[in-house]
Amino acid sequence: MNIIGNYDKLPTEAPQLPSNVFSLFSLKGKVASITGGSTGIGLAVAEAYAQAGADVAIWYNSTNADHEAERLSKTYGIRAKAYKCAVGDFDQVKATIDAIESDFGTIHIFVANAGIGSQSVPVIDASLEKYRAIMNTNLDGVYYCAKCVGPIFKKHGKGSFIITTSQAAHIVTAHVWQAAYNASKAACIQIAKSLAMEWVGFARVNTISPGYIVTPISKDVPNEEKVKWCTLIPMGREGLPQELVGAYLYFASDASTFTTGADLIIDGGYCCP
Image: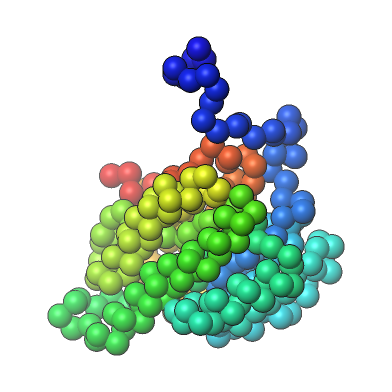
C-alpha cells in the first residue's frame, strides 16, 4: 500500500522531470501560441517564451505583429510567426489554429490573452453593443480558442492552456463602473476551472489575474484617474508587463506539472484588503 491510498499503483504516472531548476523552466522544443501578442502583456509573454527557447505564434488583430515576430526570431534564434485573427470569430480562430499546427507541427502552450477594456460607464447608461463586444472578445474568444486547441492537446496527450483574467474577476474595482468587463473576466476563471477538470488527463489549465499594468490599453486613461488607482494599491504603483512573465513561464513549463485549475493574482496587493 502506498502512502496516498489503497491502490496497487498510482492512477496516473508521475512525469519524469529534470533535476536542474533551469531545465525545469526551459521551453526549448515547445511551440507557444499567444493571442493579443503584438503589444503589452501578450508581447512581453511572447518575448519571455522566446528567451526560454520556445517557438512562438503571435496573434494580432488591429496592431500588425509581423515585425515583432521577425525581431524575436532574429534575437533569440527561434521560429516566430504572426497571425491576424479576431478571436471573437470562431471560423477565424479555427483557421488560425489549424494554420499554426500546420506551420509548427503542433501547439504545446496556448495563452488566451486577447481582451478589450472598458470605460467607466454604469450599466443603465452603457450600450448593448459595447456589452456584446466585451463579452465576444473577452469570453467567447477564450471559449473558441479552447474548443479549437483542445483537440490538439488531447491528440498529443499534453498541453498547457493559460488565460489572462484580471483582478476585476475577484473584486469590483473602486471608482470604475465596468460590470460587463468584470463579469467577462470572472467567467474566464470558471471556464478555466471547468476545463482543468475536463482536460485533467491530457492538459493543464490555469489563469493569471493581473492588476493595473502599464500597457497600451491604459495609455489614454487620465492621470487623475490613475492617481485614484494607485492610492488603492498597497504597493502604490502600476505593475510592468515584465513583472507578470514569470507567472506565465511557470504555468507554461514543466515547473507546474502538478498545477491545474489555479489562479494567480498579481496586483500589487489590491485585492488584499
